[in-house]
Image (cartoon, rainbow over all chains, first blue to last red; front, side, top):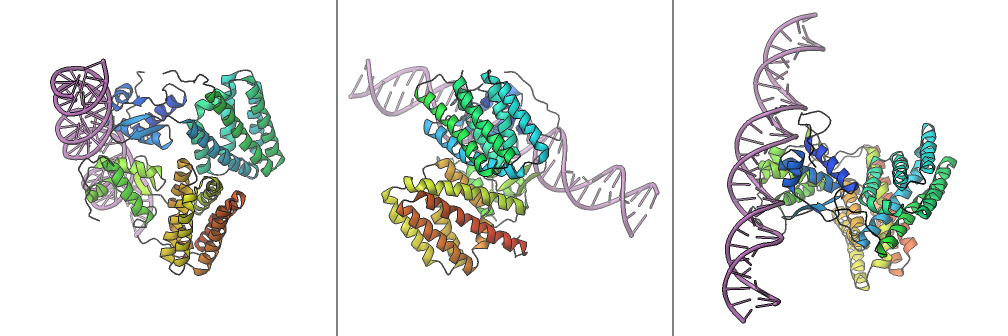
Amino acid sequence: MAMTVQKTYDIYATLPAQIAVRIGQAIVENEFSPGQKLREVDLASAFGVSRASVREALRIVEREGLVTILPQRGAQVTALSVDEVQDIFDIRAQLMGLACERLVAALPASGRPELERLYADLERSFDDAEAYARASLAISEFCVRNAGSRRLADLVLSFGRQTARYTKLSLSTVERRRQSIANWRGLVQSILAGNAREAEGFARQLVFDTRDTALSMLARGMPETARG
Amino acid sequence: MAMTVQKTYDIYATLPAQIAVRIGQAIVENEFSPGQKLREVDLASAFGVSRASVREALRIVEREGLVTILPQRGAQVTALSVDEVQDIFDIRAQLMGLACERLVAALPASGRPELERLYADLERSFDDAEAYARASLAISEFCVRNAGSRRLADLVLSFGRQTARYTKLSLSTVERRRQSIANWRGLVQSILAGNAREAEGFARQLVFDTRDTALSMLARGMPETARG
DNA sequence: ATAATTAATAATGTCGACATTCGGATGGAG
DNA sequence: CTCCATCCGAATGTCGACATTATTAATTAT
């Protein structure tokens, strides 16, 4: 990786913030494997900035949980145990339920067509695992971001990013996508029908199903998506 | 404030981590007022370290939400709008409910006496608002930390710290403490009886009641606990 | 007198260098 | 041959200096 960064002092982002986004993306998109050490010197020369900027960037990425910083031992891509993966999915299920419950009241009428469009995208990409994962992420993000709480949205999405690799893994089979899309259909209909309780249920089930599939695949020693 | 920091490289904490703890404590204990600017130079000279260490410390404190860092504009003590306070309490209620629900199954038999002791502390300090707030925090922390999820515990406690001033404000009246202690009694009994559903309900109610009191006090223009 | 413009001050952003600690290679004792 | 102590290279921790931007003060035009 030999990409350079704008060193002009623009208004929108400070240098470490830009680097942080890049590192975060790289981790979510599996360009680094879990547990991999992220050496400040390497990153600094890779991005063409000083160690100080990288160091601050790592603190920012740590905030999302994607990176773990150990004193005197540097940063590494967060490696989750099976228990931790389960834990994150559980918490996310709860928060996703809360978000979708709120969404029912918070979604403005103008947002309904987009919700339907995003669901249509999901159906259209049913046969392509990669595309389905992307579409699933998009509609998730839409739901969560329109639930009326920036904090809640950031939390849910952060947990989602931390387990992105497992979600992707789980959506790799057709049966699983069939299950997933059924949940999404139920969720979207509940939202459009104004049934908050039901929406919460579907949202939680959606995450639970993903969790169960991913964990059982892991238990069977399924190939990780990593490629380090 | 003119305190100096161990500059010997000990094993337990790196310098910025120590500073971060101090800053976090200072904010939670109301030594800074919300919105107050935290200048790197000031903090650096106050703690007797360089700006770089302070800067990293601020990133760590930002992780807890106690500090907000704006690009090119530095750090300031996070100032919450009324909506944000409500939002945080709502999310925390949900998570506290989840934690206490789990606690019922996760609490080992050896933890029961301590839970009872912490509740006894609560009753004993009923007449002193300050002491009651401390005891309340202690039993909360115990419950959340024994729910089996480090992540969930950190989240709940982090949200708690972010709204600590409002919780303290709400517990300043006797009627409110009576309400609070009734909820705690119910919660402790539910836990000891092994009733997870009920425990969840009491836990959520506990936070909701705090939220309602704090918000109504704020709406009436109650004196903030700040002293900046 | 007020408002806009500009200059001075003070803050943050970024960097390179030095200090300290970690991890593995090296070598010797049992 | 294995295990432990030691040492060396490499990585992180910390600092002070310089670059750039925000903020305030001064100045001028209306």
